[in-house]
Image (cartoon, rainbow, N blue to C red):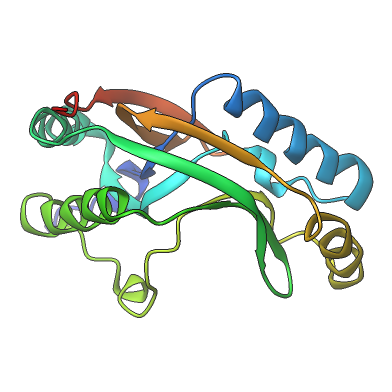
Length: 194
């Protein structure tokens, strides 16, 4: 008699790795997301905290979370904190509007080294990521922003100024709970040597 097959996919959860901006930038970005919900009927971005994605969502077995956390802790202990500069708004037509993040060499290095680490050590391969260059941003509205609302919103936001800077001294592992993304754990990055 054959044993019934166990469906491993039920044990897998979705995770991604990001930088969560500190207060008060976090609150300002959250207010902007709320603004899009109220004025442009776009609320999908509220399913996650304001963030800059470093590694797109991936599946991982929930029972192996300790290994994932241990490996990310190891990575973070050997990775310097990076300066982050937010500057104005930009968009990916026809649905996405975001706070633009200036791509510095330090931020680019962090993202590339995290990707190499995730491939080599965690064996993560997100095939559709290969064609996309790293374009750091903080999403304010995306998939549920209707095209007519996108046009109106972009007319409003392309003229607005926004500037903020912070040192990203930690990265976050976010986990999907079946409804929304929540910060599961944060990993401290090393202080940059002046």
